[in-house]
Length: 94
Image 1 (cartoon, rainbow, N blue to C red):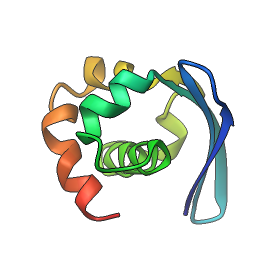
Image 2 (image 1 turned 90 degrees about the vertical axis):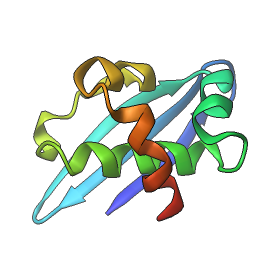
Image 3 (image 1 turned 30 degrees about the vertical axis):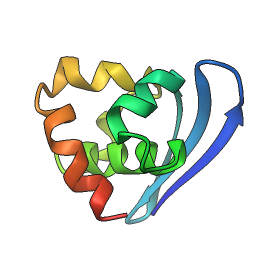
């Protein structure tokens, strides 16, 4: 279960993300610039959909407890260089 709630309307957008896998639940504060969202989704998905897809990408690669508690969406590419190439596949599943 991935729940994405927008908490800030500025630029960058701000989100609180709750991830529940098994019996555990983690919370994350994520930021994403509006132009980054446009670039990552080519304008075809909501910012919330983009964040959810990013978390599905992360959960396929690491346990939820390893996901940073606070980060900007662009940080994912530092740890997983394939992120932007793979994200469209995750967006298409939403």
